[in-house]
Image (cartoon, rainbow over all chains, first blue to last red; front, side, top):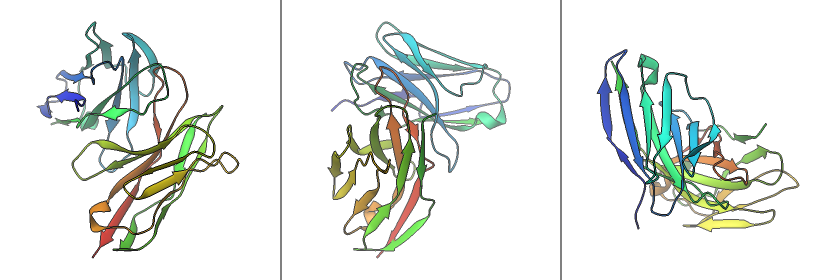
Amino acid sequence: AAGVIQSPRHLIKEKRETATLKCYPIPRHDTVYWYQQGPGQDPQFLISFYEKMQSDKGSIPDRFSAQQFSDYHSELNMSSLELGDSALYFCASSPGTDNSPLHFGNGTRLTVT
Amino acid sequence: GNSVTQMEGPVTLSEEAFLTINCTYTATGYPSLFWYVQYPGEGLQLLLKATKADDKGSNKGFEATYRKETTSFHLEKGSVQVSDSAVYFCALRRYQAGTALIFGKGTTLSVSS
């Protein structure tokens, strides 16, 4: 079965640089979610989109922005990167109209040096 | 607000021992409840779910029952294996399109042979 695809798998950036993470949801899933997971931490919700509109917002820094495109893929844009942004970033998708579980991708590991 | 509280780990067991990981929640309304598992270096995988009171979710020998009266969703397995070693996250989600999954802090399980 098709899964959530994230790219890249690994990304190394320097402080103050920008990064763009991409997420391709499971076919027919119209909702995507972004999470950040620090080492040994639980995943922290950043933001979600349902039918290309922002549907929920968590602890996303102002330096980050995200959007969902017409084909339902999503991109997380991160600017002015800080050392503390180093983490695993997960994207998840689900159908938006019922209480289905979220299906997670394998994540993008971002390292800021 | 909505939140999930899990027993702190790590939990260390011998193979074939009985496992219980406690999870309680606070939520408005009637959320759906989930257990996710994360193996080292991997993403989050759905283990089981329950969408209403008294529902029992089960998968791969793991079980959890949605207890509304005690606001709990404890994870159990009768006989753990070394391959069950992972981090287990309890989570809840309100019924509304695009709303986030809220995770507990996670419980690390280590099973030795």
